[in-house]
Length: 198
Image (cartoon, rainbow, N blue to C red; front, side):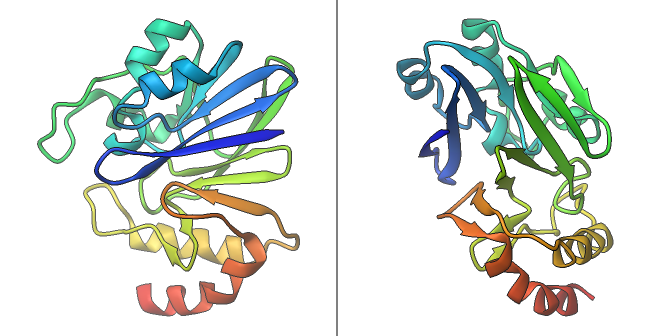
């Protein structure tokens, strides 16, 4: 598996292109992601969203049109793709596949697991591909996603962090902003974040 990443837009939101078995998966195409993605994909099979905030989904619609591949997101964040956010008029998009709970699907012969960790948004999910986690705005290197936005839920975030803390294995994590980390590295900080939110 080959991972390419580029921070997009004023919030430097990481857009990922995952190349696997001569196919590509696009994760969180943010502001102005279209030219970069189109230059680098030859056999795309899906667009995946970790959650529905505008800076992660801005280029969903134009890429859907250009690439003719399915857009996949957790069902609880569908409404974020279809309405205004923070007074911004970003391109609306319509998902083709909605994930319920935590679930593994197969696209182009590639297993993709959505691990549902609500809190930052109702549908925030970590996307797992070949034992690598793409965490969106759930977990960052040394931090966690904010819970003071509309539709955020601090209580749900605490419950998600408690589940994260109990994970008995390590995985590399590629977050929605900033550099990579790992489950084990971030588990060391979870107790302090739970205490802070509590």
